[in-house]
Amino acid sequence: DKGAYPYYMLKEIDEQPAVLRRLLTAYVKPDGHVDMPANLLNALAAADRLYFVAAGTSYHASLAAAPMFEELAHVPVSVHLASEFGYHMPLLSERPMFIFLTQSGETADIRQVLVKVKAQHLPTLTITNVPTSTLAREADYALSLHAGPEIAVASTKAYTAQVATCSLLAKALGEYKGVAAAEQLDLFHELSMIADAQQSQVDEKEVIHTIVKDALATTRNAFYIGRGSDYYVALEAALKLKEISYVQAEGFAAGELKHGTIALIEKDTPVIAIITDPVTAAHTRANASETAARGAKVITLAAKGLAAPGDDLELADVHPLLSPLAAIIPCQLLAYYTSMDRGYDVDRPRNLAKSVTVE
Ligand code: F6R
Image 1 (tube, rainbow, N blue to C red):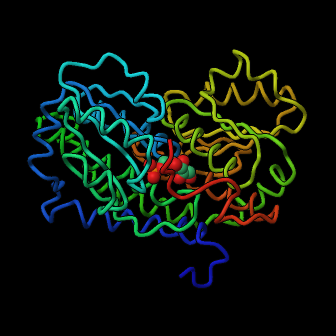
Image 2 (cartoon, rainbow, N blue to C red; image 1 turned 90 degrees about the horizontal axis):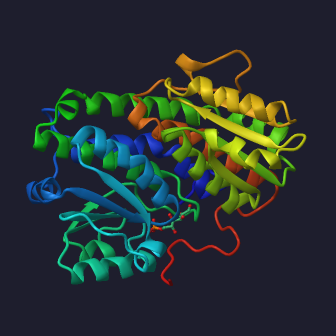
């Protein structure tokens, strides 16, 4: 039931802090250690490379998850589109393990990969919001997202639940392997702070709605730019805008703009810059300025510690590995208000289905 909400999507955006807290209750023991099945950790620790295979929003969540496993568990990760992987399989490492991030657990593109890798007796893990789903049943291991049913076609809370669950798994694996970076990270504390940060972000609805009225009300296209994790957020932000408001939106690694895409910038083209990484903040700002010099309407979403006068919205300062969990929220709201103001059915965008069971 969506209660007083006009659309499920807004309700689901608002639920994200509660989902994150629920995940912490589900996966963190009272002593602060992450509780993951020992046989799963054993299988992951035996792998020399993790292959994430996913589609759409879950692919973007996989991109955000990869650096967590590399940094906290010291295992190389590659991230693949399911629809490509099955038919153009790369040369695999000696001891690969497959992780399927999938909200529905029914995506046909992933299932065909699962069937192929199982035929080679390679270990598989499904992380899904539907524990009874086909992919959960057919993989060797399964983890739940605890996000609760997601009704809106455009995924919001399942995305953040995927990213958060992966951070917990990466931490557990790192501890299991004795990696110092994992042992030293107080993930419970960091994620609790993120739940608060998400709450302050969902409370900024009026600011976001004003940005939409100023910059996105009638535009036909929009660009999201960022670097590192902010780039992965840019990809997901663009997908959200595309799917429910039918605006031609693209996410770019900020440094890539000048290698071609900047030719598309015209007067008032919206360019949304996402800046949470201190290492690259100045570069991304410079890239945004280059678009402004060509007439773009730049909207800057920057972390508090990196904020500059004139920024449009302040993002919370959170652990760099976890920044997508908070930074995506204003982007979800930008898509929501753009769709709503244009009079579309936010929850049921044209041509799309909640789970995609054909290849
Ligand atoms: C977009 C969205 C889709 C799905 C994709 C994969 O909001 O939800 O891009 O992420 O169709 O579906 P799952 O995650 O169920 O495998």
